[in-house]
Length: 343
Length: 215
Picture 1 (cartoon, each protein chain N blue to C red):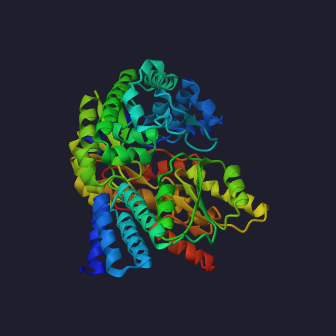
Picture 2 (spheres, rainbow over the protein chains, first blue to last red):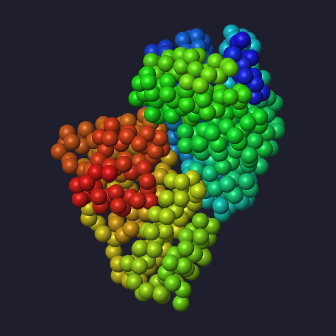
Picture 3 (cartoon, rainbow over the protein chains, first blue to last red):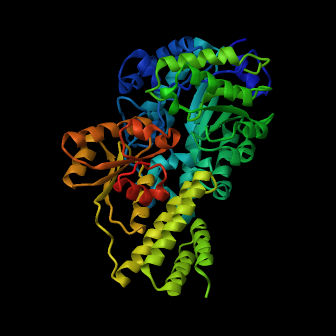
């Protein structure tokens, strides 16, 4: 059974040969190639080279074409700040005043060098892996992208008090998100992981989410021409899992703070779970701890399929030692074989 | 006359509804009830603490915590000149965001400290290790609150601490932000003096730290 078949079985709530493993490795590729992160992301070939190497090295079940969250901000004309040991971050918000939203347009995918590099990587990787390994493309949700566009404080102001500007910005973001997601699918992505941390009640209360971000996600997902996952990037998911299911997505990235038994029950035969290893704590995990963590997730959420083992945030930090990732991979193969045994 | 407990609960509801006008009306009732600034400060801080606890439990959102802290700060500042009250400027407290432009966490903590009656210097966001250390030294900061969003920045708190020590500063560091919430021992590993993951209890954290007890 190959990675693609294993993943599709999990999504369809069927038990494959084992639980699939998605190590979401983005900037970690620079570490693999031993080059600076900025240089790594400057050429599609680097990403292709590293993704293929890491797929084999860690026996990873996915290819992750995600570069960095603010690649979309670059497309809008915003700034990206590179650091030597972490994910590239968005610079100062490019929307300085609320009124600026009126002048904002939808960026053209073909005019952004950063987006074009991601599409090139996707095309090249598709040629390499064909239908054997799923290729995961990434978009920011229209609802959550605004935090990077204008800063959280200003965004909350329009979300709560300036409905007119909120709706204008969401219209732009929605159009951009659909274009970007479909371009990635066309380039060869198997599915799209939409990061939507603001969907978590940790960030926005459910009532507000239901009247805003939920409808936006539902509309956006219905226009994306392929499989989607919704990732809450460390935010708790259980209180909104029914809502996220109703947006039409197939997979949910959940938090270490979510109760595994309860989220399994809530997701059974409805949505596939993606998670939930603690990506920050794993820096210091030893062999025993890694095995315990992997076993715990598989024991509580693996039965009947519907689980892809991954981290809770959607990106493996630069600081995580390779040995930890190798051990995670080995543990999934040791303890994640179907039919599951209780370890 | 409504009792203070009931008013306090109504105040909390108004904050969670993000209803500035209603919150101001209830706050004024609290003032009329007791005619004391200390009572106002107490109502605001205790309410923010309860809201913070609600966030810890996952019952309240970060946006509600933020909005509540801003409203409380505005209300407290409205009454201060009327009553001739000034913010306490000792110890010298400062806050900054290390290597990130996301300043929501900083803004929440800033408002809570001021609501609690302390002056706090805003050192800004997107600060490098050198910038933050220099500003801390230049301003003779005694308690430095460092806000971070990403793990790579959280780890650099250690470098800030080392730079301060190298220059003879005895500044106490309180580290907060998402990475510290995901790893409850991270603050110790980066050499911070206290864990600032819980914004709503930040005043208590500062007081405990200055008494020489670690949390």
